[in-house]
Image 1: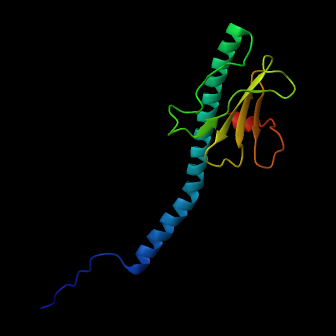
Image 2: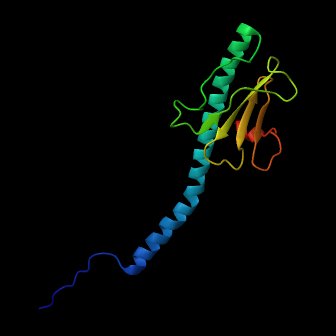
Image 3: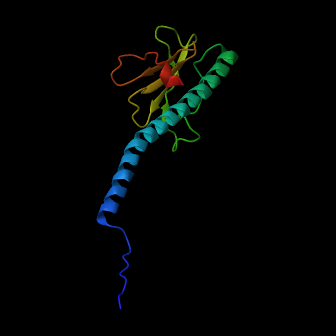
Length: 143
């Protein structure tokens, strides 16, 4: 009488192939995921800048100056969960504070491509990375 031997489980080769496939998929997916998270944080910063600029423009329409404008100092719903810190209103270069104001969103986590985003009341949309001496126009950062 012959007994049939049944084997259960996976061979070492099958496990190795499965791990290689998972590794390849992870190597492809991870950069896309991190890029998505960075773009989401950038979108939050743009939204915070627009909200802060709207409050500054309201102040300007009441007093004809940007000087006493107040707004949240964070880009998200609260300070703990925000991805960017908003700077206090500053004047735009040589223009006085009653003529132009700029508000910047400084990332709390590094953003090598766009860095600090700056919005001016003149409509200029700028960004400044670590290597830039001053803010420059980078349209891809504002999409």
